[in-house]
Length: 345
Ligand code: AMP
Ligand code: MG
Image (cartoon, rainbow, N blue to C red; front, side):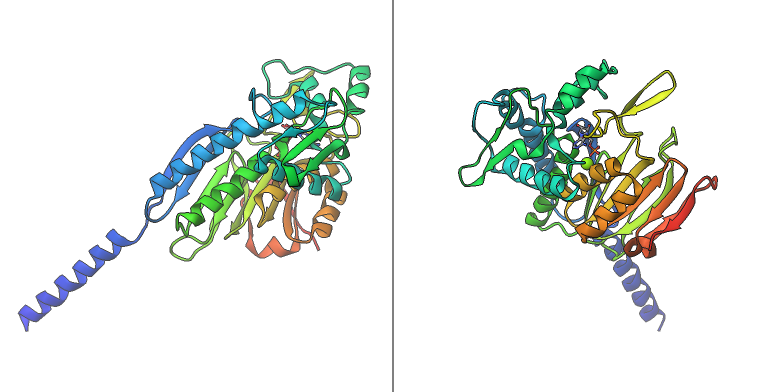
């Protein structure tokens, strides 16, 4: 009897050991820098390290294609030939330009990748940000028009209609990189992973224990990156645009990196941040920028018309609006009770 009891206890201990050893309790974590931001990955399961390296190599290749400053890259060559006909581009660049056009059409041009000349003139996020003279901005705003980006998908080429026009994919390329990362995870058989490209989060599946991923929504005025809420998701992208991500201050006024395409000035729409939850990370990225430009009312209307996204908008008067489909998955974490939670109908 005693021997049997020992055997039983040993069996239980061995099974417990095997369970903990085999269960992917801890993800493989990787951190790197690309596309102007820190990139974090959490990957569960086999071959996680190899997969994370494959993802980073791909993101760096996308950066070389799509960053405005990469000499010889697609966007660079497209801009150099503005007003001079078509340029052969990688199909992936064409696909991002196509997604950008969709969001431009939906947002009536609030999102517009031809905002490049104005972005350049302000230099927000560069070493020399400045306030351009009014007259200069007026001229540059006249160069913004997404319908001047001509796409020839059949031949993988594109053109910019007028000399001086500049495409800037800064508002959508990280989102695309998130979708591509997810596709690599899936190709490699990964079932649970999370990638965060500086506020551009993509969650693949659930966590291995079946629970959802908790994504923090940053307090836009916290110096230390505190969160004001947490959203629980699986298999979704969670993408945030905010006036705290890149900005400069002059005479006590904040100038953020998102441009109002109507005026050429940094957006002052009454919002501090917009977070979009959707299955397409590319479109969520475009939508986060677009809704930030549009402000609360028009932004909420855009989300309704898009139909496949939920949103969290934080206003300058410290209200947090959460759309209906997300309310069950949102938790307020506002420790100092600064914010008011508004359940959007
Ligand atoms: P995001 O952080 O995704 O909202 O994107 C902001 C970046 O997109 C800026 O740093 C610019 O490179 C670019 N951008 C700024 N304003 C706009 C706009 N109205 N439409 C499209 N892209 C923009
Ligand atoms: Mg964006």
